[in-house]
Amino acid sequence: MKISVVIPSYNQAPFVKDALVSVLEQDYAEKEVLFLDGGSTDGTMEIIEPYRSQLAVCISEKDTGQSDALAKGFARATGQVLTWLNTDDVLLPGALADAARVFNNNPTAEWAFGNVIWIDAADTILRCRKGEVWGEAAVSLGMMTACGPSAFFSRNLYERVGGINRQLHYMMDTELWWRFAFCGSKYVRLPRYTWALRLHESAKTSSHMFSDRNDPNQLRIEAAKAEESEHIAGLKNANEVRSGPFMTPFRIALKAASPGYIWSHLDSWRWRGRSLRMFLEQIR
Image (tube, rainbow, N blue to C red):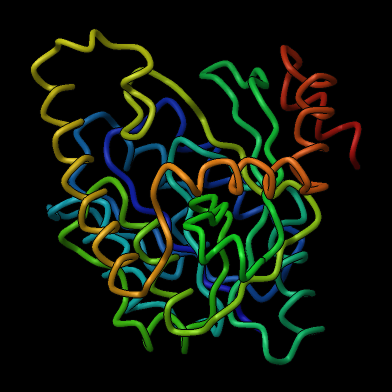
């Protein structure tokens, strides 16, 4: 089973090598790596050049953002299973083999989620997060623990829902997961941590943690996120997902009862402040 990994890139030179190597060194032979850069000006492509021969696609051209790069990458991918990795994140060892095992052992599986470790720019662990398993009740209450590039999905499922929404720039992953769910697909939860999410000043999703809330650029970003959240809320309403303040206690109870939620706190307590390298050496 071939797994295609799309890597969308734009001006993340300090981290791009670690991201790419984390995919190339996966202990899974049937992988395809596609690197799509949006025209970086920070030396990204010079860093990538030594690895070009190992990439099925390696281009640098102007695009309209991450969603556009992902759509182009998935259109060129030839694997039966698709995933992606951002250039400031890391795919943890064994992730592709774990995903392939799930699909091979579950013939009807179309979608799988891993678990995530949050790290900073220096690879220090900030938090560990294991998501919940699929639950009809949770989804009907608007709960779905979905961790971006830890998702693996079949090409058939991706094409069935119409692919990624190129109009979204911040919540394109969350919107895609809900469309997967609304078409009747249920995800399988991978047992191990598969992905390290890096929080830093220039990250698209976490830059607000490091900037002034009144910064004009940050205000623009928050407005765009709010608009995309409204779009997703509309999808939920159209599919009769329950919402409202009275649902909050039920959501909290469901999350607290999840073994993954409990293990997340234990692992965070154990590993917070330690290096990702130390963590990986321990689990090998």
